[in-house]
Image 1 (spheres, rainbow, N blue to C red):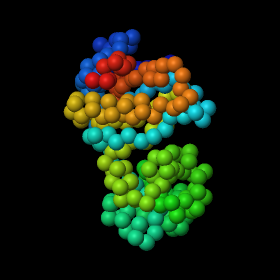
Image 2: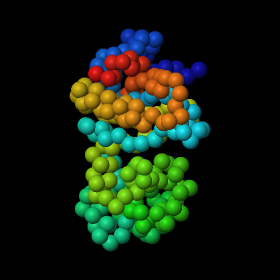
Image 3: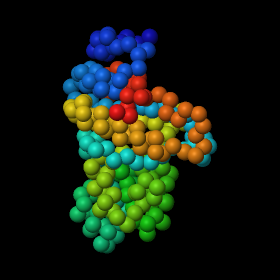
Length: 231
């Protein structure tokens, strides 16, 4: 059995794993326990009462975090002519068409978000087996297949978070950095949970949001009292 490091042991020293913490206390505790030498990401995980194997219980969407994620997002855009120029002007890191497709097929994927104009989907569709498993395939429902490439690039750069429920019924996302103020983290978390609530699928039965947990990259996880998230 692997030994637990002194840092992690200390982090859990005064944590009650059976307690459901109010959101404000949970955020304060998580920030206080983030002792790594880098700015840890604060992550939220939500257990949902859904079975993603059924199409009418799939949970997927986007959320605009009011204070961003604190992460630098590299954006690739498949576009031509004027739309390519718009994407570049909006701050896209990589813009192209067939040439970008060839780079992706060759394994060059130095980006975190992929956006495409509708007329480029014939090209992008050929990359489905590469982009799909990485969660990078442009999708109209997520606003990443659009003629408004400038708006999509701006949103991605500003801290828009995409989410998709996993097989076990869990959805998670980074909602900020440990260096954020407590209020900023609280507002981001509430916005994310609200987006999950609004994305409730028609096939969901019983209790939809079953459990919410909060943690930092290297810190302990805390269960959050769901009623305290509503504010």
